[in-house]
Length: 198
Image 1 (cartoon, rainbow, N blue to C red):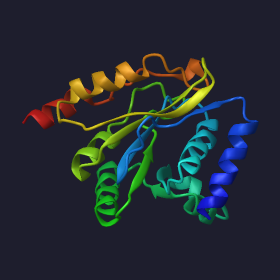
Image 2: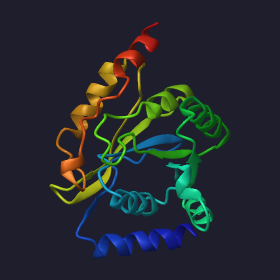
Image 3: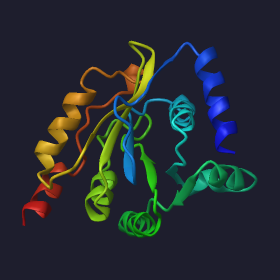
């Protein structure tokens, strides 16, 4: 199945007007991958193309509504994990437990909700810190029609400094629909910083 997916990814990148940017130095082992800017549902296709080309077996979080009916088995087959957005702390706990019990856990998170305009959700930061996962900065940049995986960093618990690094990386990345891009700033960045400083 992995080779079939890799073949589909190669075909996609050959036919697509988008250019794939592979990791300069591939990272082995479990990690969390950020997908940003998240401005379009086409981001999902780009994410699969990136992951399948790299032969990654990824997991991703999706609202539970996406898993209803016949779509459920398809979404789970593509690595989806249904989440109840009304229980954010429960989501973080469940994902951390899965990360600790899975040898090569690769989780893709889109902290910027499509067209939400309210800043980034902090779940990715909490998960990465709690499960001790490095964070790879994945991106889609409409201005260059390129998508791929950028640098991998270890979060330090200094929330503002960590997010400044994230902001610097994404400063020139526009997303598929630039008009829906938001600055990489956590909705609760100040409060989260206080928690990690305590």
